[in-house]
Length: 393
Image 1 (cartoon, helix red, strand yellow):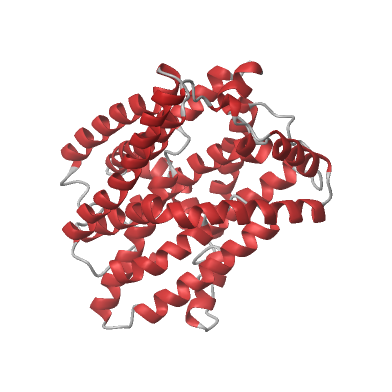
Image 2 (cartoon, helix red, strand yellow):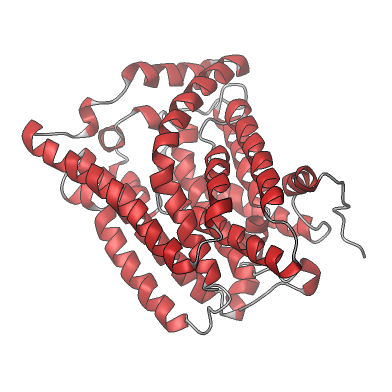
């Protein structure tokens, strides 16, 4: 497995590489929310009526809900590595990890209220507090416990909705678009001031976070547990040894996942089909992508050619929050006011272009500094001491 030079503390470059690619996928998916009232519409009818049905279909199948699972698993992987490192160094893990999650939670709150309501950092911090205890569990218990925690409640919910749809008939989302919120979103983000956006964003986040507190123990936490189990099995460190299995798992998961994610288009965009797509298709496609990228990371030319992507992944918090700052300034009225004026293809190309610039800047930044600026602040808050971030010549 390719590692960074010893000056970079022997980081696993494939871990940063996959984190970078997941940030790109997350940004492309989030771009729908940045430039349109996506949260309040039926996207299947909305984009079909606008002549963008095909663009949305490709995005929905291959991008949507297929990259945040990667990031969640990598979060668990990294936390498990920190725990194992503390055991080797005989240093305390719990107090440091708690401070680390608390600082992450504060970053999430600032991000959600002052920049963008679609924040995920707060959720990761909340589940991270739970993972501080779970990371001590043996890998088999973590893995199979995560499967049970994920499949049973999500499977029951999906099954109940499917049975309910058989009795109530057509249950497509076209009847359930929130017209009032949709219009308010366009008015505030497309034409309002920063203070108006701030108030609306706070209301949005409180509604979203309330739902997330109920759902994340069954959606995000199991993915983190699986990532922690993978870390204990040293999947990334053993990538060369496991290359053949990773190819088989990657292709199989990708094929099955894509088929599940296509169900709303092959059958109908009913709630049950969308839950199958999100809860089961998304993570399978994520595993497929992750396994195949990990195999590619065993090839020297790949890691060399896409090293800026790994640098962006290494500065994941700076990259993620930077994307929100850039996108909201482009689309909201207190910036360039492009909200509701960009189609899916243009938004996707913008996301890719912005990420390419971020990756190149991250490569340049990390040639002079040890970590990203927000990561440096995170470290200061965690350890309570100011360390130099500049690399010694």
